[in-house]
Image (cartoon, rainbow, N blue to C red):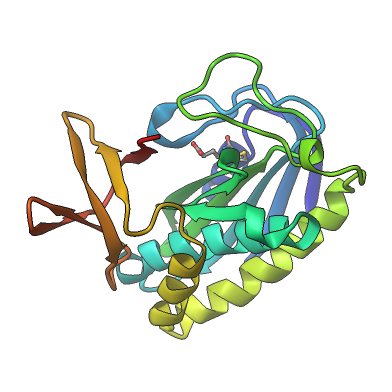
Amino acid sequence: MHHLECIDSTNCEARRTILAGAMVDKHVIIADMQTSGRGRQKREWFSDEGNLFVSFCHQVTSLNESVNGYSLAAGLAVRDTIAHYLPSNTIQWKWPNDVLVEGKKASGILLEHVHHANKDWLITGVGINIKNKPESETLWPTTSLESHTDTRLEKLELLKTFVKFLDSYYKRVSANEIDMLIEACLTHAARLGEIIQVRLPTHTLEGVFETIDSQGNLLLTIDGKTQPVSAGDIFFKE
Ligand code: BTN
């Protein structure tokens, strides 16, 4: 593990290390603060001191088939980590890999693929709001773990719990046990069977969240027809 005080982004640091040929398998980069934390869809990630910013780097072989499996697995690992410290029934998984505490976003995952010197690497960047949450308005209501408990959460202890869950779920992906991951996601999924909105780059879809298919796509039923969605942001109607 490489523990930094401050860096632009742990995912950027991981990418630089890979491109310099200095990355080792299952390496963990953690920072106390990020100056340019990055989220999905080129959004910023709030990165004040007190929260967890980590990138887990591992070498992969058949990336194309399994990338969605890794996305589901990472989301589950974060869900289980948070459920380890807060009441499990308040923690939900939100497709594709967000985790909600009492309906508010408490973490984010940014998966990135880097190919260098004939090797494929997957960077799993994870941010967990332990102490702080963004003060400015965000796309989705946010929260921090410590606002749901009187117990002080120890960052490195939480990191250890996360890495243990992540390693175990990633082994399931390598063993092609995607069905198990999908079942676990559906057990904890927010708004399964309800009407949701999916924002895509050009338009918004609205339909019933039916299930997740074997590729990790969200299946939405719109006017009786099922439509798979591979990427997008989901929103709930009140
Ligand atoms: C999201 O948009 O929900 C994903 C946010 C991912 C943030 C984490 S923090 C650690 C790693 N470094 C980054 O710059 N981003 C990821």
